[in-house]
Length: 302
Image (cartoon, rainbow, N blue to C red; front, side, top):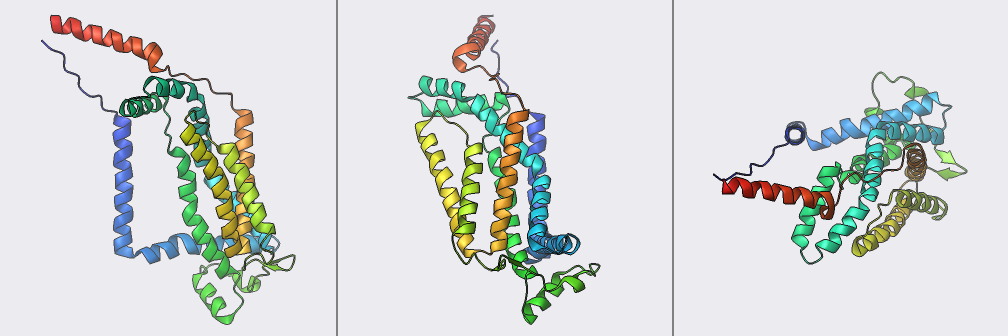
């Protein structure tokens, strides 16, 4: 009688996959029935626009203060995602010795190397792609905030008319604050930085600092080189975008990066250093594999 190896099914993973597909299906159905433009306008633009107007109206009517508080609130909302991203990065760093052993052992077998790396991630409970989630969540916020800032800082009659259409009906305080005073040291926050130096440099510098603190160490030379390239390209790209986008959005980037760096520093200081808890295949895992093979041989003989 031969033993059959039945694959183990993880109920938690199945429930997570089903929930993901249900959410994706609901979004697709809503988009086709309601319209993607209406969802974008009602679900992103109008909430961001009215939030900025609310903070401006009740926080001294200072647009920089309104953007600062708005940025901190968004960071608090996405705080669980950032904590998950930081912990995933720390777990990845703790697994680097095991990853290096795997790369040495399976240097000539790339397929087996990928399989063992996935097994190592699975046993350690680490998702190497979880670090991308906070960035993906903030992408629609960035685009929506760009449009919201341009709408809020309206100064022409046509722009003021469009702004009035997007304000919630119960928000009566907007009558007393429009048009907004969107200037900082003589700079119009609805337009790009006239110097093309100050805000782009601040955005690039704070983005580089945040990328450096969140960088995941890698024993793979090619991966390490790619990480270094991304740490350089991302700040330069955002710095260039700042020369084209409104200064208000640039201020949002700077404040968001500073808050992100503070959160990263606090987590690194408060949490204990991680100790790898997963053995590499050359150690305990190999012994378990040998024991399992011996058991199967005994069953086959019987």
